[in-house]
Image (cartoon, rainbow, N blue to C red):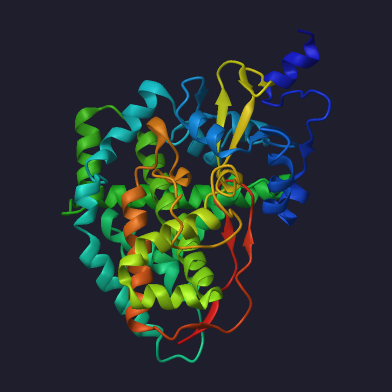
Length: 412
């Protein structure tokens, strides 16, 4: 291997055989579904101008989510994007989402009890009541942006209640979370990094302040318990304690607001399916699941190849950055009949939704997200059955990681 090849491998950027395309961010942002559809039929994996490579097919994405030859990215991604140090870098260096092996288990373990499915299910009545209260708040208005007035607030209020954060702080920590999560897209430029760094610093400082308040005056809430248990066990560094909470805030607010808005928009775009769910509430879980498939709020999971991986004759070199594209996999014609059709009654939905990841890194908040989406949709059906779109479908941006959404104008 010559020096150029070594540099390419260290940077996570593989070289491809003739014929395998390298997709640009611009073409993927312009038409992700169409671009993936075109190449998925020809190749199991294609290049990506920033992310190394993109795995396109449902079977391969599912398998590699759990393949021991594939690992979390640790700090490779920020290093590739010109972020080698700083508070933004720390989110990758000290977080559970990007860690592997024993380090990942150590960082994740303090949350497993709090986010156990059975305990989270106990929150359903509270989430239902909160969703209904939010609907009643905006029902008298002639027209609202459902994202700002509803789907963004359900997960924000829920994570605030779980962590013990004041509801008055929701505008602050959600704004910072949305800004920091932009680092996971491939559309930010070098000149955007100082702003992202400032948001990361502010969000971490917000968490530090909350922990200092609990240390000085303990309360009966998650932050107090988490801090006490972490300090007693001595398993987490001070930086790790802060970053796990930062990641929890980002993951607990951003993805579900997008998914909640898109499920409402898709059903309103298909009024016969909205009517079916309104008349038969038992269809709500299926509607949630199909919405997550048709327009996932998480477009991909980033990974690194620990060793060379052969996909139908195309070899992903060891050390390569890998984008496991849930956006492509969930429209794979080989896995779903009429994959580009939105159908809440389809019988081929995956048993495990890939946008929540797989293996050791399967999302710890999956059960919570499903409850928020189901109860958020249920409250709309009960209290605003005549809801209608008053503008265009919301614009969903992004082909990878956490996607971004524009306003959703509706009237009841």
